[in-house]
Amino acid sequence: MKVQHEKMKILLKEAHGTTVDFDGTLEDLERKLKEVAVKIQENPDDLMLHKQIEEIDGLIKKHPDYIKRQEEELQNWLEANQPKFQEALKEMRSILPENLAKLGNQEIQAHFKDKDRPRLANHIIKGKGAYIAICSDKEFLAKKHVVELRSTYAPKSFDIVELRAFYASLPDEFLADPNGSKRKWKKAILEKLRELTKKEDNNRLTKNEKRNSAYTATSASVSTGTASRGKARGGGPAGFNLAAALQTGRGGLKSSRGRGGPDLAAALQTGRGGLKPRCCAQSWKRWS
Image 1: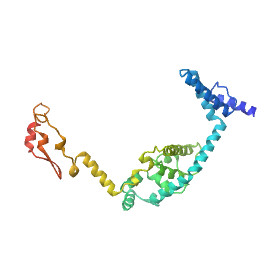
Image 2 (image 1 turned 180 degrees about the horizontal axis):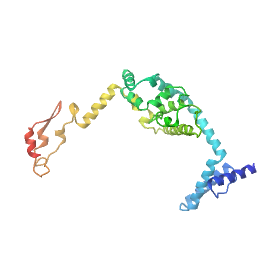
Image 3 (image 1 turned 45 degrees about the vertical axis):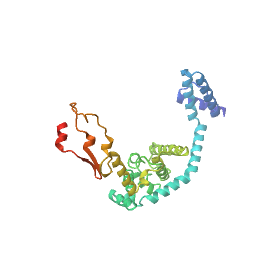
Image 4 (image 1 turned 30 degrees about the vertical axis):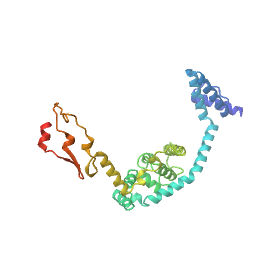
């Protein structure tokens, strides 16, 4: 054991170029990290202490016991979350057309129009490759080139349900991955998923991270939202009373030349069809 510790000490010092004394145990490294952290609180301007804590942190992360601990924690997390992955996969496959890969954009639009999900079609079309992967078996992406994984099949702005389903559809091992690029791509997706899960546990997910609004938007809700935006802009039948919203001074609205213009509030009246000018075009022209 002592020989092993000495070898690890040499390897880690060479890897990090550190002068931190290291006796080979993870527990001692973590103890030293806490000790230096306390010293930094007492001497926050001591640059040597800051350098030392960075070196110790680097040694900890390279230590085999730390790596083993992290792997065990990840495995436990994956096992605990496996039911949620499968539930999300089942939900997404019940929503997506089974033959999504063979459908063109117009056919996807028609499919979701029949299900009264008008916004969902565009949402699916934008990330079609990733949704095709969700509908496919786990080996679908195994042979894909890493460039395709990063572009065509990348999950773009997925909510937590979508991302769980997508991760569940990824292969356990990729083929033709000599430099581990595909594995790193999968790891990055897992890190994003863990980040969203942590936010979910702390009740900090945004509405769209929890579930994209495209999944709940119906034709009626889309129409209502459009009408509301029209009302806010004051256009068309939903326009607001501009005359009531305007106040004029003693001389009315002043033009850029400083002359008193017509009383705009008095010159406008609103009807069911929106704003209607009560004055003729010539009178406005005189003050322009």
